[in-house]
Structures are given as C-alpha cells and as structure tokens.
Amino acid sequence: MTDDAHTDTDETADTHDTDAQIYYETDADDRLLRDETVAVLGYGSQGHAHAQNLADSGVDVVVGLREASDSRPVAREDGLRVATPAEAAAEADLVSMLVPDTVQPAVYEQIAPELEPGDTLQFAHGFNVHYDQIEPPAEVDVTMVAPKGPGHIVRRDYRRGEGTPGLLAVYRDATGDAHDRALAYAQAIGCTRAGVVETTFREETETDLFGEQAVLCGGVTELIEAGFETLVDAGYSPEMAYFECLNEMKLIVDLLYEGGTTEMWDSVSDTAEYGGLTRGEDVIDDDVRENMETVLEEVQDGTFAREWITEDRAGRPAYGQRRAAAADHEIERVGAELRELFAWSDEKDEETAKREPEADAV
Ligand code: NAD
Ligand code: MG
Image (cartoon, rainbow, N blue to C red; front, side):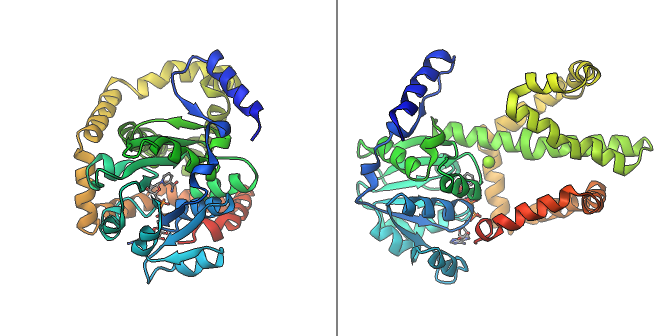
C-alpha cells in the first residue's frame, strides 16, 4: 500500500486516546516470507482463507491434511499443494495451526518431530498454548495471527483488495524475528490492510472466551430467550415476541456496530431511549454483573478450559444435550415459520448460497 496509509495511522495514533499498538501495511516487510514455505494445517473456515490469501500474496504454501480428509480434493481444486500434516510441517519454515482447537493437541503430536530450531508455530487462537495443551520446544517461535472474522470474510475482503482486522501476539521469540514474521504473515493474508492490533496469548484467549460466553453467544441468546418467554408466559403471541426480542436485535446491533451506543440511542425514539436508559440496568443488575465475574474467573483460572477438554474427550455428552434443547426451544419453531413467510429470508438464502462453497469447504 501507499505511504499515505502510514501517515493516516500516525495521525490516528496522535489524535486518539488509545494505548493499543496497531500495525498497517507499511509496518510489515513482505520479504520475510518470500523465500519460505508456509504449512497451513486444516482447510476449514480459517485454513482455506489463509492458504489462498498467502498463495495469492506469492508465498509458497502447502496444505497439511489427513489422508482421509474430504478437504484434500477441495484444496487441490483451489490450486494448492497438499500433503499430510507431518510432511507439510517438515517442509515448512512456518506452520499455521488451523485445525479445530480440540483437535490441535493431537495434530501437534504428529508435527512436533518436524519442528526445527528457527521454525515458527503459529495459531489463530491462544487456547492450547495458554492452557498448556501444546508446549512447543524452546527454539521455536510461537506466534498468533487471528483475523477478527470468519474465514469466508477473510477471503472475500482479500479478493476485494480490502482486509479483515486482526490480532497479533508473540508467545515466544526464539529467533528475534518472531514479531516481524507474524506481521509479514498478517500482511500476506490481508489483515494489515485493515489494521492489526498487538495483544498477548493470555489476553486474546481470556477475552475471547469471556466475550463469547457472557455477552455474544451465551449472553445474547439467553437475553433473547428470557425476553421471549416473559412475553409468551404473559399471554402475548409468540410471533410478536419473536419479532420484538429476536428479529429487531439485528437492527439495534447494526446501529451499535456502526456508531456505538450514542448512534443507537440517537436513532431510536425518545420513548425507547428513556425506557432503555432507565430499565436496562434493572435487567442487567448487580447479580448479573457478579455472574459475569464468576464466568471470567472460571476462564482465568482454567476451570472452563478443563471442563471443555474433559467434555470433548468424553464424546461431548452434555454439549449434545444442550444443543438439542436449544434447537427445541419454542422461539426456534416460531422463528423458522416466520422466516419462511417473509421476504428477507430469500436474501439470506442467496447470501448463504454464495458463500457456501468456500465456507463449508471442510
Ligand atoms: P474449522 O472447524 O472450520 O476447520 C478445521 C479444519 O481442520 C477442517 O476443515 C479440516 O480440514 C481439519 N480437521 C478437522 N478435524 C480434523 C482432525 N481430526 N484431524 C486433522 N484435521 C482436521 O476450524 P476454524 O474455525 O477454521 O478454526 C481454526 C482455528 O482458527 C482455531 O484455532 C479457531 O479458534 C481459530 N479461529 C477461528 C475463527 C472462525 O471464525 N472460524 C476466527 C478466528 C480464529
Ligand atoms: Mg471466539
């Protein structure tokens, strides 16, 4: 990119009250990976996007997949070289671990003998390193480049000449080049076009787990279901409850995403604003905040990680039950019927169909 981008960056840093270190195009040195081979292990959401973006950026890429993997023909179709994880790691200077987090320790066992001093082992999430499920040898750099978006967005943004924001962290700098090499990788997958924020494995892992449990996936779903049940139990129609508590959530979140709480409050009616400002904290009260603290403590002290690892090893019995119960909730039945009846469901189908070949290339 141009030097202008860098100038903008410096201005941003000067005029905004943020301590976060953010890197852009001109901070990265694309020569660092030019003569190297990168092994991308896994070809799912992140794997397919990283592998294709790296290859389009001129990096030599080999995709590491099991002999039996359905992704092998998909990766070959996309013009990439395919090998087993061990073969790919043996060839590579940088190994990017993009198989599911629960599978990573087993895949690491396969590739560990192939890691040489000076190699880099890279992650897109800190879970296994932070919770000591993977302990790489001391002479190997351990880094993280984590795009803040699903793989099909990482690929789509790159193809449009844009980038997905990302996080960068160095867990171990054995070579002295760990940071610069991670930044070169972030550039090659497009992230420095948007901005790459410096973090640590601990911070990324703990904030990510807390966010998805307390606010995003867990918190928001329970909030929606609790609101829906409150209305339905009081005799209101499930259809009305669905629109009010689930469908309209998107409109509000879009406003929050675009302009923060101020823009959201400005856009809703005075009545909604007054009601929300006075009643919101009655719902999310001190008890809820205490519950959030407990959730955070269980993330920090490893309780959650141990529970999830044990659950996964046991064949995920509780996970299966919870999942079935969630799918069985009345809001799901009502929602499926309503989404069929209204026009916006067609838009969604088209969007899903467009990204399916890439997103589901597993
Ligand atoms: P995924 O589930 O989409 O795909 C993983 C791929 O790994 C599969 O497609 C397959 O090719 C391979 N694989 C699956 N099971 C395997 C096995 N038993 N042995 C060997 N290979 C196997 O995974 P993902 O969502 O891309 O996650 C990869 C990493 O990226 C994780 O660390 C995750 O936390 C991180 N991450 C994901 C996202 C996201 O939005 N999906 C965003 C940021 C970071
Ligand atoms: Mg997450």
